[in-house]
Image 1: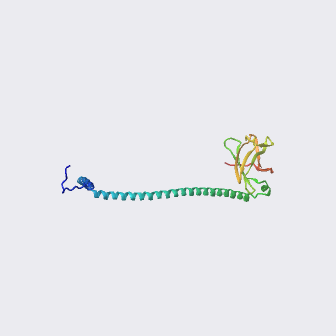
Image 2: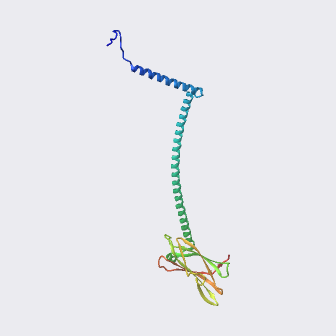
Image 3: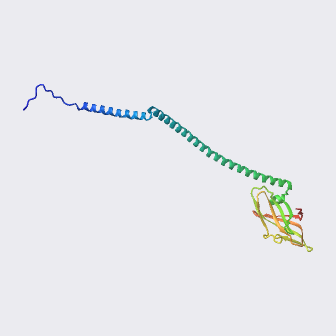
Length: 245
């Protein structure tokens, strides 16, 4: 066996130091590569500082725009709320106006009713019956000889709490060949013997009639029957007077 020299010293290798040196070398290589990359971009016209400043400005602009969008969204929500509220207010206002117009129309009808009561001096019998022929006019219909139109206005004489309905009929008394005669609606050209009515305060009615040839009318009688309760019918007679057209 060979003997080692007495002055020979054996030392262990240090792998940790080798690794550290390799890491440092790798980092230096990366730094050199990045520096070369930045140098190349700089030579190509790319400025890192200017790019950073531009990025910061763009981020600030984006933040400002986002805040403006948030403010606009809030304004839109407020406007939508105001629009809905305005629609409801307009609907309520239209409903109120409709009610007021209905009240005005009702009061106007009541006013006309009481004017008729005052101007025509209604008797206790009229008030008991509850109806009155307020006005009657006879006009000639120029379409044919012997054709006339009777215009009459029925008035509810009692306090008009509710509507009144019923029927009325007309008859004409006169002379034919020297003899007295009475013609009802059927003989006067109407297809029905009586006409219906329904109103609360008053109602204007026009009835066409045709007087036969050779008949000389003298009086016109109106008979009104209310349908709600069995009361004595209203019968009023008027002289035959044809108004000039």
